[in-house]
Length: 392
Ligand SMILES: *Cc1c(COP(=O)(O)O)cnc(C)c1O
Image 1 (cartoon, rainbow, N blue to C red):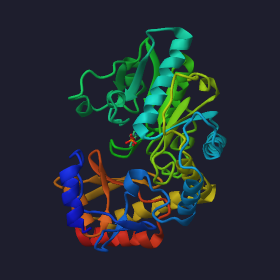
Image 2 (cartoon, rainbow, N blue to C red):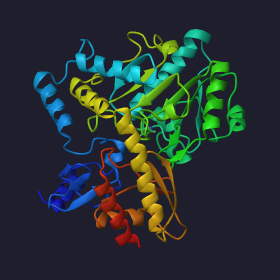
Image 3 (tube, helix red, strand yellow):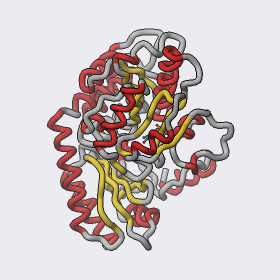
């Protein structure tokens, strides 16, 4: 099919819930994508932080193919090797104790919220179920995670929402104390707010929150759906903050492009969700887990150091272009935000770059770049050259 035929068919038969860019994608290699007509696009999006190994990564393709031939699904009523091995690696590399596998970020966060409430219920009984989240956060699109999201625009249309969420300003312990009360069971945060605009929290603040949580027996829940799995240059971003969350959620990059998510919990939380309290049919799918194992094998410490170096290179490259529409860059590793100067429109900038062969994202008030972690210097340079040509 041609791009136009795909767009027409999509418009006719797929629910119109996405503001799409005007490009159809057919295939990819490395960090380069191609439309059906063969036009190339440098990818600074990774399918919104998912395809950390880029496209056509041979070990990933091989592992998925081999596992699909052996066993594509069997449910969690039976034991399977790929999920067990992936869980072991994730625990070993983070210091957490156990994993629950799910399928998407919002679903993982639901599990994290359920765990926090049950932890408190088991220990303190009813009435201690409130969760404090941060303003400008993003936690998902389910009825509960919309409410966990600290942005008014998401608290609309779908009433009644789940009760029990309060909001505090990021980087303010005073604001957290003001939002808290006797009924709080947990604090939930992204250590780098992603959808909110690529805003890393202050290290001192995150450590102070972890201390407060430990003192009051509030669970510290960290949403690493976007920041996890190497994106920020460490396996999980919390590792750069010197904390160990009680529960941490992951999703986007975990299986390099297949739908998988989950939560990691520490020893204190390992028995909170017992048999019958939480489940999901597709969770721990063996094909997704086999893909996840390749991601873990690829993301060695040396590879993660490279992610840091690539992020620094790309940010410096963007700042050196000194484009009239862009201000400062920020972020961690290959999770990069770019300030858009007043008088310029982030959506128009994105469209212009995409027309010129560079896929980018927006977030909060600015631009957001999430290139595949395997991106080469040559591909980054091509992307920078497109920025210069399109926006210079
Ligand atoms: C993307 C995202 C989610 C939602 O993940 P889905 O897979 O779309 O449900 C939740 N939290 C954060 C921080 C995210 O970036």
